[in-house]
Amino acid sequence: MITGCLAVYRREMLILKRRFKRQAAGQAVSPLLYLLTFGYAMGGELRFDGTRYLDFLLPGLVAMSSMTQAFAISTDINVARFYWHIFDEFQAAPISNASYVAGEVMAGISRALMSICITLGLGYLFGVRLHYPPIFWLTILLNSFLFASLAVALAMVVRNHADQSLLTNFVITPMAFLGGTFFPLDRLPVWLQKILGLLPLTHASTAIRAAALGRPVHVMSLVLLAVIGVVFFGMAYYCVNKARD
Image (cartoon, rainbow, N blue to C red; front, side):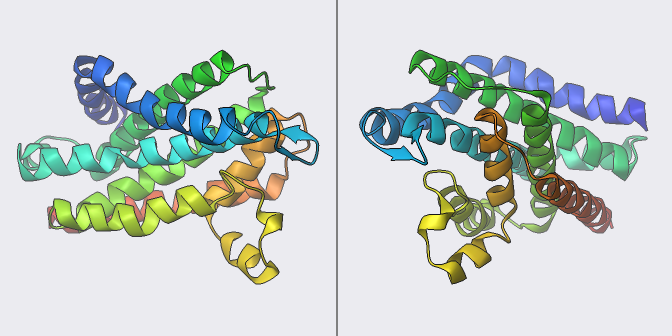
């Protein structure tokens, strides 16, 4: 299983290496724009609970980047599946379904970590100095694992790129803006807070921000991310089985 998993992962990393400069430039655009428009323009004046807005914003951008870039592996899977027929080759190869899922999930996590390093680097250039303890990185890994697993599952379900775009627009984009990335959820009505509390990105943003600001992290947020991640990984395995049938 490990050999098959590493083979799938190595293929994705070779593709990433070939596209590294373009990929890095693309991953830098969104956080740079957010830091300029939302952070730099208001960062000196706006504060939440005594925290400068730039310091509040950057952990949210980290959470959002780990979600979007981990989920972006679904696009690569679809291109390989619909145009290059790579998935058919994996079917013929002696690689188990679990190995395939694990390899793609690892690739999604790697892309997310690359994006986060770029985001943190940009934050440093903007004068953001935060804490990055082990629990900060653990939360990022759990969040990336969760959304990479979801990406593999949905990539096996969609029939074309139009369906993929719909899933991104209706699942990922709303979470990016409503998951506590840009503003504190306690500013919203209580009923809406309860709804948004069901989103995994909300828990990821809260935990990452707490760790970065040197505040206690609620263990239940980490447990929830881990449980949902395992469920999504199981869904991915099931969907790969169905796609192969």
